[in-house]
Structures are given as structure tokens and as C-alpha cells.
View 1 (cartoon, rainbow, N blue to C red):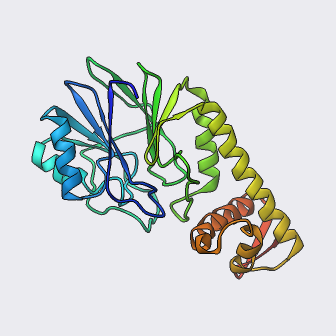
View 2 (view 1 turned 90 degrees about the horizontal axis):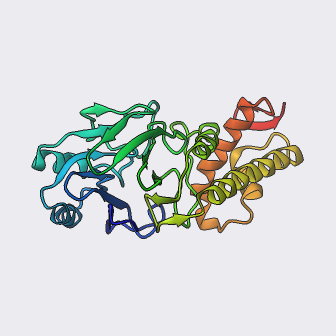
Length: 266
């Protein structure tokens, strides 16, 4: 990892978070803290120790409870501002404690003498999801938009599959050398990774369509067993969220119709 970036992983590992949420400190003398993570005292203490009173601002990729709850206590302790966005739709994992002092929009930049961070609005996993591009080293901090070793959950209503795929395609416009994800390790070959994710999502979407075609007027629980027959049953509750996102996208695309929560071809 570049010397400009320090990573601290929170001790909140689990089925959604892998080994834990990654917190990043960008810079040496004028530090930007990105995704402070869960409000775990030991994690906050480590952030403050590594930051050595040089943390000047807090940026949040999105406001799920594994990414932003530590922002408020750190902001209060250091008297520094919080940057981010609020969600546009209802979210089941929302951190209600996070209210940004500065609302970030697509294209906004934060510049220091050491580096610059460009804000890229990447809705999909969450309507308020942001990635941050460090121009000097061509590194993209991806939050939960792209994760190492795990498929991103798209959970409606705040999660949206159409937005997610469009946001992935948007990243191709940037010259990126590597990803620093919200979970897992540094990821090289960014273009290959983006193409692989898009291909996987569209392949799953095609399978959803074929299953509806084969079994007309099915509800989501019936389709879940068909569409995700290649996924362990213990993961089906998570897969069901993304299945709903696929069904909504296909309905919006005019390929499926939904009548009283049963699906058939349009």
C-alpha cells in the first residue's frame, strides 16, 4: 500500500463485513479519515493513536452501521467536521447518528498540500454511497461499492440494481491503478474487476429472467430456490435482497410484471 494511506480494520467481522470494516487515514500531516467504522472504543482509540492529532476531517462513503457510527464521537473529540450524504430512501442498516456538517456531491474535491480527493457518487449499494479518488496515486477508496472477496448486497428500497451497474460503469472513466475497499485487501486490476462484477450481475439477471419464464406467476420465495440454487441455503436470506433488486430492475426495464407479488413475463 502507498505510504500516503494507512489502513485500520475494525474488530467487527461477520457475514456482512468479512474480516471487518476498513478505516483509512489519508496523508501524513493533514490527515483525512475515511469510514471511521463502528463505534467500538478500542477501534476509535487505535484511530486516534495512529492519527496523532493530525486528523483534520472525516469522510464517510455511506451511512451503514458498520461504516459511520464512530464518526460522531471522533468529530466531537477532535472538533473536526464530518463530510458525507444522507440516504434518499428507507434503509434498514442506517446509522441515525451521522449528520454531515458538509454534504458532498459528485465531483466535489478536497485538496491539501499532500493530496486531493475527488468525490464520485456511486449509488447502488446505498443511495448515498460515495467513492473517493486519490488523484496523485490513482487509488479509489470504494467503500462497499466494490469489496474484496465478497459480492455486494443490494437491498431495496435504498439499494438499487440499475444504479449499481451504472455506477460500476461510471468508474471506467477514471484512470485507477488499484482499489482500497471497505472490506478486504487492496485490489489490483481494477478494470478487470469492474467487468467481472458487471458480467456476474447481468448473468444473474439473465438467470432470474429464465426462471420466471420457466415458472410463471412465482413469488420471490419460489424464485429464490431456483435462481440461487448454486448458493448455500444459509445465505439465501441475503441473496433474497439482491433477488428483489434484480426483479425490480427487470420490471423497470419492461421485461417482467409484478401482480400481487407474483412475477411473470411482460
